[in-house]
Amino acid sequence: MDFIKQNVLLIGLALVSGAMLLWPMLRRGTAGGAGVSPNEAVLLINREHATVLDVRNANEFAGGHITDALNIPLAELEARLGELARYKDKPLLVNCQGGVRSTNACAVLKKGGFSRIYNLDGGVNAWVQAKLPVVKES
Image (cartoon, rainbow, N blue to C red; front, top):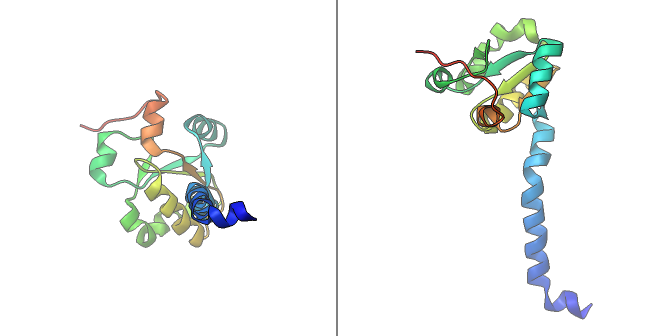
């Protein structure tokens, strides 16, 4: 008991640090999209014919994107959900540059009634790091 009293600040710091490390994982679970690695994403595309939704802006998309990806920037996603209506019950792989915007997009899609949403962990950065192909527009 004396140990706890003498080290209450350090114990508090350890608890807060642990919570901060767990927060992204907990938030991802409530955002609506299951996180998948680039390799899992390839299997999803090849085996289940997942549609890829890139939520980056047009310039980022033109700089390099996954083959056959649809581009709807996150800022426009809610207003353009009707364009994705035919994918409501099909696998939808959502990506951005690093994974933050796509997490937010998954929440918008879940709210919009989409049932099979997958978030590419690490976004296009992880895709490229895994040495998977990207299409660049000229």
